[in-house]
Image (cartoon, rainbow, N blue to C red):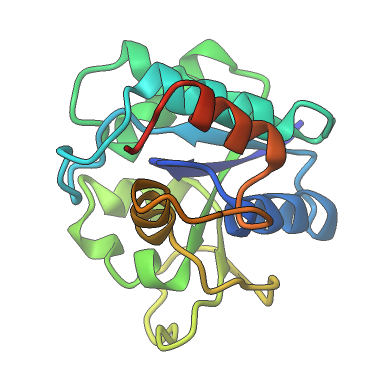
Length: 189
């Protein structure tokens, strides 16, 4: 089985994330897409992050009825901060019969050379890159890259958190089950 790993803080998960994950699951040669909730991205500040278990639960709520998507908390048991190369090594040991690939936006792909042991990643794992406006792919770092024209929504988790804090509606930007859980638990207030 070929599994695409879509890493993210998902703070919170929103429709933009779900469109990309679903598009990749049904429009590439991957069998499944795992939404890997990262406890701490070493390239982002941790201060605004909701607890990782709560973010994982929100991802589970968002994808519960989609058979080709899966929430993954695999990085919760690994050393912090999370490095993709370490997660891939761990997954290779835990699931030796699976083939793993990475899913990322062209904005993240432009920063690939800043990743820990990125040379190992590009040698051993295919990378599915969805285009983001203003972030052209000019360098592939020798990776096996598949460029995707996934539908894009110009929304961000940062804006969603801000709007929730201001008491504004985020309906249609976040799945209803996720909004309900966020409100019930007073997240992002």
